[in-house]
Image 1: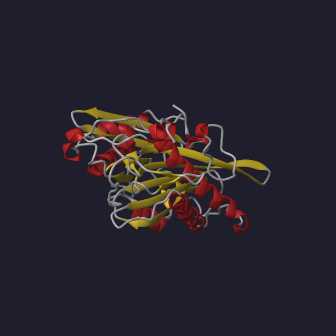
Image 2 (image 1 turned 30 degrees about the vertical axis):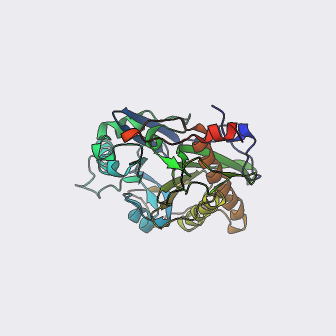
Image 3 (image 1 turned 120 degrees about the horizontal axis):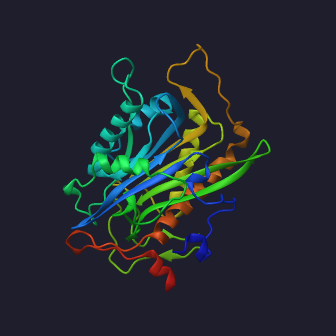
Length: 340
């Protein structure tokens, strides 16, 4: 199915990576488990930031809460310590607990001392409410689903109505998972910032395309009460303060599309860099890290904005139809593009 660029819609001016995906950042992998049937349209999406034991060698990370109407797990410790020590799981609101348990069990298998001889592990799970298109009370997501999504993670990223995005809606259309990337030259080397979104936000009729057109489904407008999770990854050396500033600019990409962060919308950005690893058991009292000069950070700000905007549009263009509980449906953005 054609992606956003195939329709001539190209947000911004920066070049995209080879896949135009978060997995253009070396070592990042994405996997999905999709659940459908009997009123169920839900699942799990896993972002594995790097291979190996993330608890023993943590990643520098940051979080920006644009609007906090959400039930995610693990964000408080990320904000406090600036570290990520598990894969990131995305799911529906009532699937958070199962995903947290799956991440804890995985970490204990890799490091049996967790919770006994050493500290506990901070499992990171983010969510959106897919209750319009899925029977969320069915509690369909299990620990096994979460573990499978992690195990199947790889460099190719399926988009649209897959994984956590199976039952999501966006600007009145069918929403879901989308991804994009931007590249830049740092110290003579090509570096990447990638975005992956779980798009479940936006009031019908408010969607604004890069060419200025307004896209509206043929159905009555609804109150803005959805959510979006944005995961940003980069291989550029940043500290936590810089990462949070970059995460904040993802909000510009969301706003360009026409969102205003409604009262009932959970809009959260989680970012990490693969460049600065943090040892769980350091051998020295002082740890040194590289960090980008702030004089160059505008390029990452633009990259976060552009990649987030395009990732949402990819979620929309790649979405496929699902029949939800009680016969609920959402129109497809790809159908709208075909006639406008």
